[in-house]
Image (cartoon, helix red, strand yellow):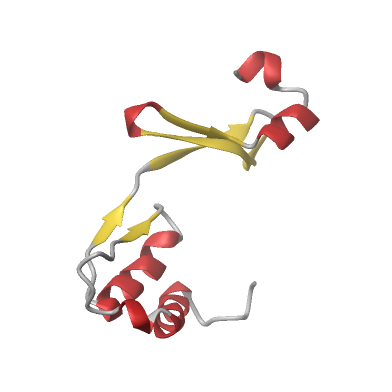
Length: 96
């Protein structure tokens, strides 16, 4: 994806253009994940005149490869795992 957009804000503006039919609606909420998703979502929310909510999550990295996510956790006891990856890396017994 490198080189496709000048930055994440531009990507958000272009995405908002495609989502224009949702502009001004009261039933629309834009949700962002921290780090890379916030600049994109900010532009979408601004252009659609919609509220922006940041959903705070923590990546669960594979122990020996921290940049590879095997899942995520969030407030309220939310935990999502990539079951295929956990099984392929034989992590099920240790991280369930």
